[in-house]
Length: 156
Image (cartoon, rainbow, N blue to C red; front, side):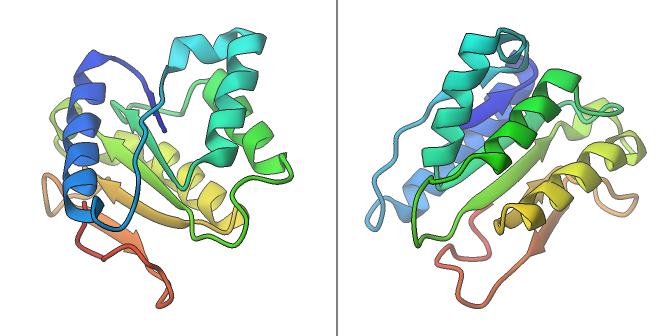
């Protein structure tokens, strides 16, 4: 599943998604569900996106990284995390994709990075980012890794 802010970051995230699919296609079946941030404002669509996230093993949040996440995205995340059920006995991964071109220093993405990292912890998910906030690398990757994680650490 992928939620995205705009077409530019969706394209960037889709490239990452394609790499994951190519790398892991022999071990997993993939189906991509796309949700634009704006669609999450509509309660019925947000409910459908919550259901998609609850069933997903891999959720991408693709954003320009500027400032805080919109309220509708945070509400979707909170409702998704509160939902019982989902994919039982499986490792889940939350991936944040930030557009490195929108902020060369990455400082404006820090609130989103921190929120998504915390959401992953609360949801017992592994967390990985691409284009993460950093001042040393333009397209850094940050990873919280669990040894029992079935995804290879270099997939994104």
